[in-house]
Length: 329
Ligand SMILES: CCCC[C@H](NC(=O)[C@H](Cc1ccccc1)NC(=O)N1CCOCC1)C(=O)N[C@@H](CC1CCCCC1)C(O)(O)C(F)(F)C(=O)NC
Image (cartoon, rainbow, N blue to C red; front, top):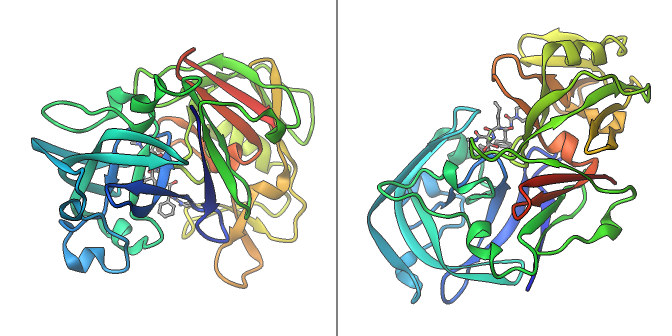
């Protein structure tokens, strides 16, 4: 058995990617952000304060004949961008891309932070991280993919995110036609809940890869490519108009500049992010100053290969073999 779901960028900056999920009986369809950087499936619901839920699609367990309250269970999560949410827990049927998990923990939000209130294009997150990262207490719950893995043809999923186009999350199979190059595999470290891996080196503008390894996470829920300062500086030293902009909290440059590509080695193959993907967006509508898709991870403490990097590749999240596969697109 397999599943295949389309995913779409939320806005002109590809800030996040939206995938429809069916919950309950009859199906309630909610737009969720699939996030390999966390392990909770949580939703705006009938239990979310009306003022916070305004503009969001919500899940009503009372309207689902297959919903069951998970008594005594609660959850609470805070993300890297300081957004947060919390609430109680139901189990219900959850279908993604035609594949159903009959009893999935659906975490209902009774509290959401301002960022979520304002982000009306999504109604919650579907975590695709390792189960160890789940926040439900007193007993941690499994992710949708973890529940599905044993019934899928293969215990893996792939992410094919695109710039300003429809992409896909495929479950249980690898559609190699989505890639141009071979898949390079490397061990994945799930001990922290993330899909951790090590890139063997990097280069700017098509030069030969160096041997400076980069350890980080493959994270569909993070917009940018966030790396160490020495890498960020090595890149922007090639961008004549680049400068750090305090108000934007990042490196900006003239939108007219031709940006060099950025490459990294992984699993014996090389993934090259074209310069065009590193020009993320004008700092405000109509501005000729653009914000960089590659920024510093210095104040985070972890390197994040977010959507800017993932858009250049077909990425295989292989739970069965505890490995990550990257193929040039
Ligand atoms: C500091 C490093 C991480 C920042 C990362 N957030 C992001 O990358 C958010 C995502 C977003 C887009 C649109 C609207 C709202 C939020 N984007 C963002 O901070 N920016 C600012 C810079 O310009 C680009 C957009 C994050 O917290 N990612 C979470 C998942 C997001 C949480 C907020 C809602 C969207 C999903 C994560 O799970 O991937 C995580 F791994 F970082 C994490 O915190 N795990 C526990």
